[in-house]
Length: 181
Image 1 (cartoon, rainbow, N blue to C red):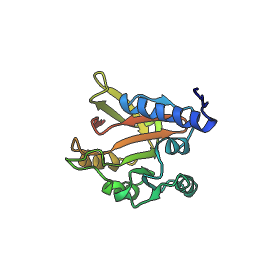
Image 2 (image 1 turned 120 degrees about the vertical axis):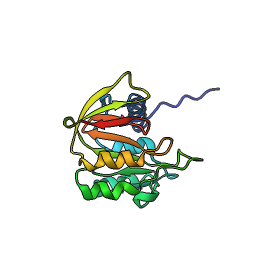
Image 3 (image 1 turned 60 degrees about the vertical axis):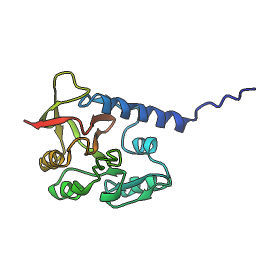
Image 4 (image 1 turned 135 degrees about the vertical axis):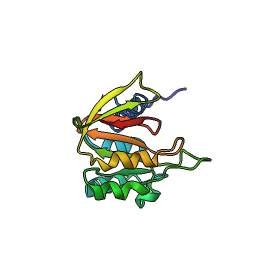
């Protein structure tokens, strides 16, 4: 006898959010529409009690993530980092994020940050998952971030980046080369 268990509303929300995260990172620079706006659904789709996180975006988000059972950690020890990129000081604080090791490049951080997609700094993206090149405008990110990222990324070392603008999302993996225009 088989027992069928239907997904709950929470299951559907986290599954839909997880799917958008995977699409965004596999097609760097393409803007994806999320089924639910903001960072909470993204965090719920990835984080569980085996994860560490650092959330400096919003104390309420920090509390919601902690309720998953995940452990709070300093930036340099966090699996998932939710942080703003609007100021030079904020960017400098993220320069210590984990980039993995040559033996374990997957032991790196994933960064989630607010941005304004479609305005601001012009970028040219090239690399795996991109046919040719993609041009993108990103606002709300301090110019020093792109230099900090370029210095941190030494493939296979580095970290993945998700830029979030309400219910829109852009994924940029460590394999993507970014030219600031």
